[in-house]
Image 1 (cartoon, rainbow, N blue to C red):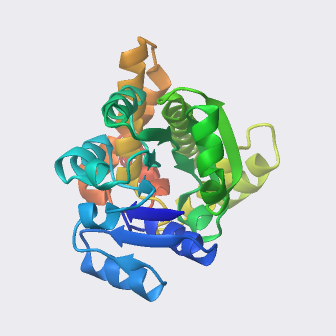
Image 2: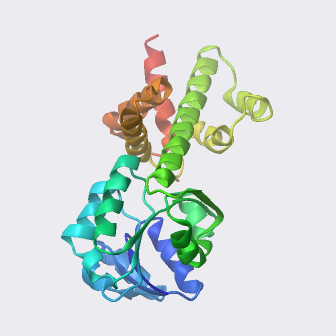
Length: 291
């Protein structure tokens, strides 16, 4: 299977490396010359444009920033037309379900297939080929790309037969992740005002009914002044924005997601958008200094 990989960022680079290690033939494109150089060193074939990466490929795998960038790459930059007739587009970025449906319809009009396959697991999951992949597409399309997906993740879910259903599961995942981080930060902020040792609090909560994966993962970093960035605040500004967009599309009320979004947005607006997402706690600290 020949694959054109577009979007060689912090997650795309290790994902591409895992596909190459699994024996797939990869061409690739990214706007970053540094990313292309790393891709070549990993055994890929860099291309000067996205369309040239896709020329004659069976699959175009997109790990781009958002739906607008996916549309640009596919339709303006010519990736869809460069794919082999009968080829397949696999969109693995986090996008609103409605936008994914629209992109799928445009791709399918050209005679190509479309697979909606967003991922969860972050850079660590991408590095270790342990991503969770939520797939919305026909059974035939799912079977067609399954060998490729198995090289990228160890938790593969065929969540539905329609494009946009994978995206819907991903936005629900991001809703819970964002709310859990904000809730943990709020809990630490309350404890701090009450004079409780945050390390003791973390130990207690980590073993209680109040625990969550996010508390155990982000909690220790919330107690650090400037932790290593594993996922930036601005990622949750983007993702919770997509959650709210999905809520508008479905006419579903999402008050907790909206509150969490405002806390991440406040943190970013203060200049901490590139900080680790655990540092949303800084906004709670600032609020409580005046309380």
